[in-house]
Length: 223
Length: 245
Ligand SMILES: Nc1ncnc2c1ncn2[C@@H]1O[C@H](COP(=O)(O)OP(=O)(O)O)[C@@H](O)[C@H]1O
Ligand SMILES: [Mg+2]
Image (cartoon, rainbow over all chains, first blue to last red; front, top):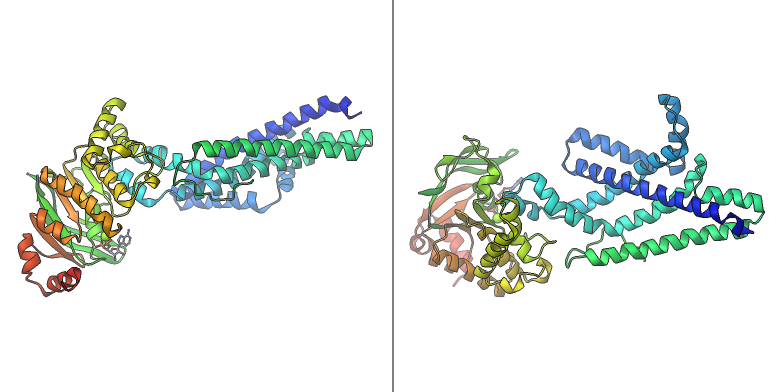
């Protein structure tokens, strides 16, 4: 029975993966930039970043999705599909969280090291590239793993704008087959398997790039 | 020839005036030691002489050139000055070798092979070449400071500035750092050192300067400052430092 729908399920899961990937990578760029802006920027930049983070961390993802999908076209006159609206919202949302993680990681690099780098004659750009970021990336991995899990599972909220990801498709299959128990159990199992494998991979990466004395974790490593 | 010189140097942080007009000069090959109570402005003075911070007033000359007035490239000048800090300041994500190499590659644009050779030579000078591939966290405080000295030394700087390099170390680890510094002094490296290792100061210093609340209140050869200081303030400080012996 369920096997008839396997194609749909696989397809929708791929959509879930793509949305997670887009949200995380867009959020990575936004998060790093906002963190740098917050740490090194002037007052004006910091206020803008603060407002952005406040909004996306202080309101439910579902509301953000509805707002972007339905209100954005009304405000701007530009119509966009649920895929684009969803991807953009996830990026902005994840960026707001990743900003916090990166800021913590950047600030964990001691002032003494920055002064030492300056004393060698390194430029600000070189200090950022060779001293701050390589350490921040290592320090951030545990928190980043949390964000991966959190955003990955949150993609199911995309169902409110009708995007055909795993949760949306499961709902319609359940409605068609009248087998909600089987369908939703399978859906849950897919999420569970995906997330546990991902955590294993990220933890493995972490253990490979870890450097003695730099294993300070800003957040707990999910086990 | 004078390597570093400052004229009427002043520095304020907000309303707090930390340096209140300092005149100082150090010539090639000279070793000068600064002593003085904590909070008197020694670290601030060193940071400013290392061009890590601008002064509020006054002029600083590097090899005769007025650095701020002539708008010289600060990074270029910093690359000719070696700075050793009180706190362990090695880059945590780099091995000892990489710590020493990074300035050579990034700033002096040396090729990898040349930088490696230079770095190993500098690590040898501080007897740390066997630890080249270890990370800072795997070393003792004294070993970290020695690598810090190697990092400052590798570029053949015109002068080395030391800001209490042994102050955060356990007593047993102090001597290994002092040993390295004594070695450098013998090799004729120009050094400006903030330290309270009095025996060391007596041995290597051409001149000892006493700093007190932002001023150099007394200076002279070690024998005079250490055994026969003019000001009661210095006398009292030394008595307490030597601890009654
Ligand atoms: N960046 C700074 N901002 C504000 N005050 C500072 C700063 N750096 C040093 N000070 C102040 O300047 C004074 C001298 O400090 P410092 O140069 O570290 O003295 P020392 O090295 O002799 O102990 C202290 O009162 C200290 O609090
Ligand atoms: Mg000090």
